[in-house]
Length: 365
Image 1 (spheres, one colour):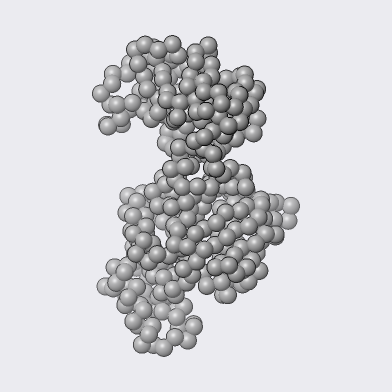
Image 2: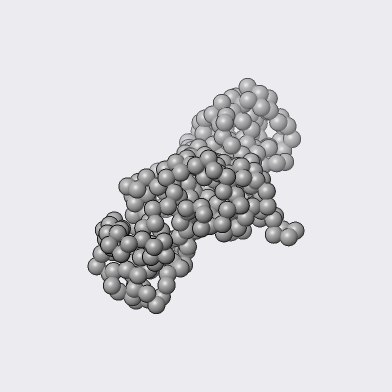
């Protein structure tokens, strides 16, 4: 398969900038996710890698070769679309064989390849059926099969599970990841679903407003978000943000929230002005004592846990706590956090203040 290097690519449509100078590397054999809200530039980035759009500037390297201006037919990349893009007048076998027939491959070799791919995807029993009568899941398998049968250097997938219902989508996500692991393929996958990205990806690029907000492993992005956007977009419920004003110096290990000292990571850079204290709900713990306190205004029971919403002097806060902890609306409770689970942000630009724990995590790029 192949390593893909994206180097300062930019895409303009007239006066509209769809992707601003973006750089990242997709390693050989990775399952790589392009994640972000609608209109953020992730699909445009995917289409530029595949050759369906040409970058306005910047370079795309596939196995060290600059393919930025090559047509799709010369890139050896397969594309899987959300809406399957199958030929409705052909049966499954002919849909699978079409790219091989177009290449002039001998009939006997084509049959062998189709049988092999059908076995991998579990579609051997539907090879002679018309694609129009297939379920959404089977049609998606056929679309994947048509890409796999070519044995390309890399696969591009544009929300391929988006048309499936939620339960079957989760099942297909597991199948797709298992298929990737068996093949050792380099796969670039676009999604707006953060759970899908966290479940399937080796690495994730989070995009917003045409910009790469962060690039890293799922754990890096979840535990140490580089920006407030990433912290808010990833996680359900998302990260809590508590406001405070003042200054934070490099090396400082605590801050004051409404007059109460709260532990934070040892910082490598400082800031002053309007700052934001960020902590995920599962890292909030409640107690009967404690000087920083909040009033419970809602409790949502989820079976194994519950989400408690609290009103504090610095803003609203959610805590994910054990289901057996009695949480009564109107109750006042002490609130605590571990310093190593906290993020600090500068509200002016939304970026995280760096610490020893998030050194090297990439933000805007």
